[in-house]
Figure 1 (cartoon, helix red, strand yellow):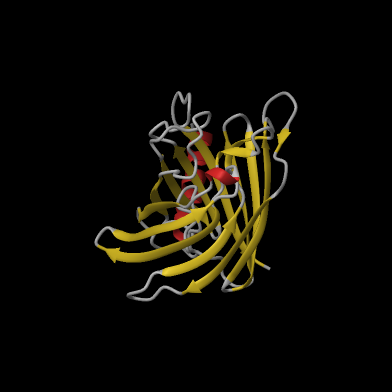
Figure 2 (cartoon, helix red, strand yellow; figure 1 turned 90 degrees about the horizontal axis):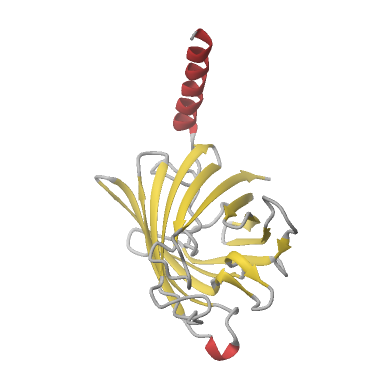
Length: 257
């Protein structure tokens, strides 16, 4: 009993310490800007001279790793790569090409004006199909994203939105899409995020229906620069043949060179 009590005390101290010193990208005391609502980008940026490593684990034993850097405060760039069956048995099915990420900050947020970025993101989400040359959820492609933060009695709320043009559909089916979302802090170290992507650029019946993607995320700052996130994607079961939502787990680490 004494050993169990000691272990419990140590764990409690570790959790308490993480809550005191946590400054990841979640919560009202976040030390870094959130760069994604759930799937779709925000106008958040890495600070000058920093880098990030993001790991996302999804269904079919899939893992995607993204590395980004901020050589300037107004410019972020990075690469990502992943595949399915990485965890489990069988042959690993890698995506064909690395995903490319870039963001340019056009406007900084002020009291009355939202932050605005122009970007490119070619990394889709979910399983990659080499035959169809696409992911389960298409990448954002070229996008323009805006974000505005507000403080109120329940903490901090951020409103995000944007328009995008993905390169994954065949040229005849490419056209503008848009998305919107919000992020509410839950105390100093946690946030809940909700996002809706109508997927106007994805009307292939073999992959999607016409309900759009509703995604939910819960993010928690564990320590300085370290944030864990649990995501529930496709709550409306928009994917063709879906038997439920997708549950994914992500880890974000941000530090300085």
